[in-house]
Image (cartoon, rainbow, N blue to C red; front, side, top):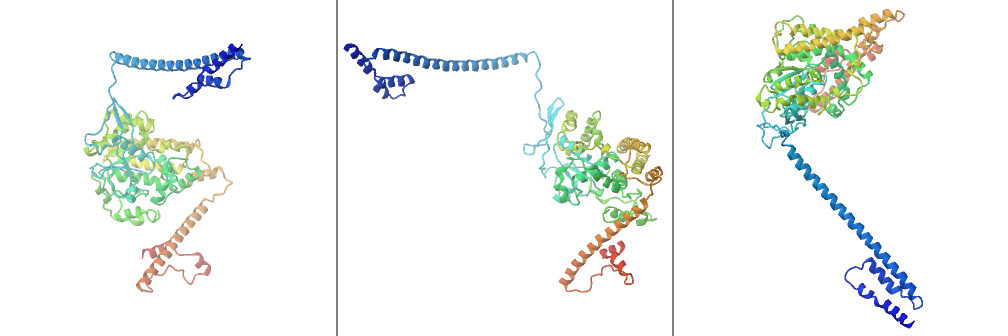
Length: 576
C-alpha cells in the first residue's frame, strides 16, 4: 500500500508543467489540460486507482477531439486546392479549344474606329464610332469647338415645330460636331459651331449668327402637326418672352403634354395667322430672301418688310399690304441678311423629319443629310463613312440615342387635337398656293422644288382627309372648339332656338383688346415722361417735354375719365 502511494506520488510529480510553462512557444490545448491536471488534480492515496483511470480516459478524449479538428481543417485546405486546380484546368482547356476551333471557323474582323485623317491627337473628339462591317456606336458630340478649324457651316431653318432638332441631331451623329441655337448666338456670343438651328424670319426667330453661315438646309413638316408642336414648345418654356426665361425652362422640353385647354386658347388666337406665316416662311428661303407680304404673298417694300419683322409692335390691321404699300410700284428687294450666307438663303436641300421616322425610307433621309454635308470638303472630311449611315439612323431613331425630340413627348398625340373647318380650309389654301407655285415652269426643274411639292402634296392629302371628317361629322367639334362663321352658322341652324351673340362678343373682345393696348401705351408714356423729366432736370431745361395726349375739355367728366386717348395719339406721342 505504501509502495502504491509512492508510485502515485511519483506519477503525480513526474509531470513537468513548470518546464512546459516556460517554453518560448504557446502551449497547445492538450498541454494546457495536462498542466491543469498536474497542478490541481493530485489524487490522494485512497482514491489513486480510480482517479488515474478517469484522468487517462479524459486525456485520450481530448486528444482525439483535437486531432479530429486538425484533420477537418487539412481536408478543407485540400478541397480548396483541388477546386482551384480544376478551375485552372478548365480555363486552359477552353483557351486551347478556342484556338483549335479558330482553324475551322474564320475569325471576325477586328473592330476599327474611323477617325478622319485631318484630325490630330489633340483635336480628336467623341464621334459616332465606325465598328466596321456597317456597324456603329453612337457617341455624343464634343461641345467645346476649337476656333481654329475652318468649317463649312450649315443653317437648319424651319417653321417652329421641333423637327429641326431631329435634323441637327443627325448632323451631330454623322460628324461629331455640335449645333447651336440662333438665340444662343445672339445672347452668348459668336462661336465656331458648324450647325445653326434657326426659326428666322419667323417672329420666333432672330438672325443671331452674323455672317457665320455657308449654306441652308430647310426642314418642312406637316402644317397641321407644326401648329400643335409649335404651341407645345411654347408651353414647355412657359410662354417665355425673353431668352433668359426660355433658357431656365429648357430642360422641360418634350417632358409633358400641355393641358388641352391651354392649346385651345392659343389655337383660337394664333392658328389662322400662323397658316400664312407657314407658307411665307417657305417662300422666303425658296426665293433666297425675297421680301414678300405675309398675308397676300405680294412682293413688298423694305419699309413694309421691316414692319413685318416687328409683329408685336404693329397690329395686323396696321400691317395690311394695301394700307402700307397700296398701288405703288414695287421693285423686288432681298433681305440683306442673306448676302452674308456664302451660298445664299436658297436651300441646298429640303429635308423631312417625318420621313426620318418612317422605317422604310428613314435611312434614305439620313443619307440625304450626310450628302448635304459633303457639299464642301471642309465639312465632308468629318462625315463618318457611308457604310455606317444606316446604322446611324438606327441608333438615333430606333434605339433613341441622343437628345430628346418631339417624338419622345408623352400624353396626347397630335391627332387628339381638333381644328375647325375654317382653320383646315386655310391650311389647304396655303398648301395649294405652295404646290401651284413650285410645280410651275419656273421651278419644276429644281430638285429642291420637286422635293417640296412632293412633301406638301402628301401633307395636303392628310389635311383634306381631316376636313372631310369634320364636315361629315365623323370628327366631332365641341362648343369649346373654334367655330368660324360657316361652322357657327350651320350650328345655329341645328339649334334654331339659340340666339347668335357671336357678333356682339366679337365686337366686345375687339374693344377690350384695344383698351388693353391703350393702357400699355399709357404706361409706356408715363415711363417716358419720367425719364424725360430726369433728363430735363439734369440739363436744367424746362417745358420742352411734349405733353401727354389729353381729352377735349369740352367732353363730359365721365368721358374724360374713361377715354385715355386713341392708339394713334399714343403712338404719335411715343414716336417723338
